[in-house]
Image (cartoon, rainbow, N blue to C red; front, top):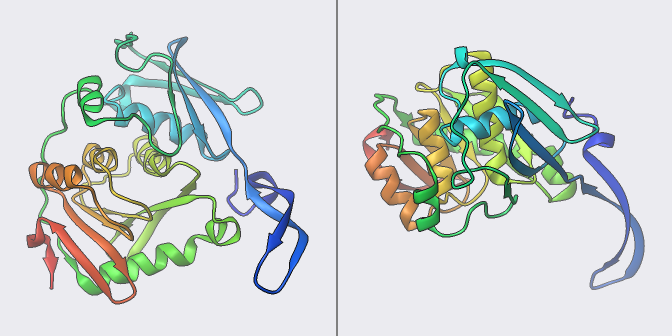
Length: 267
């Protein structure tokens, strides 16, 4: 689905708009929300609440982020039925899908799983620390954050989506928007997995708060630098230190804050 096809991404809704000077009825654009049920080898795995585009990338990236899909050669087919809201994935081996891990789990767009104890007990082992010599200039980080905001057309029109991008140097390679902030990273991960795009020399720019889940998604992609226009949580910072990921927060205008692994930042 093309991102510029706003008729598929949004719908019109009549609202009452109130400001200091008037109260009037207008037609307003709101983003569409859909549910996508993921099947792996005919087993129902999860229902993801998401935006209705790049859903193949989302499903594959979600499985990669959960530690289910690890090698491209293990993936046979990915088939999307957009009308039914179903994506069917076939792999070369029978994956271990148990109720205690992810079977039939419903992922909401705002918070995902709740509680760090549930998060770490339910997931596979933590990823390996990211070993990368990549560095970034402050000016580059500020430029990329500004570029992300400039590309966020759907957010500017509706205020209803999050966005993220994969960049190399000063160039944004992949850009994603979704109602779920976690989904934006999963879509990037899925596209990199399917198209064989290496990530160890890339960085992520992100619009939202950096929670432990967001940090782990970046770590499972092997991305060494995470730039956000918002703040990280304390657990995300701890994980970033342990997993050797540089975290820059409040990257806006001409300012930023370095929260972890400052050695990659050229001040």
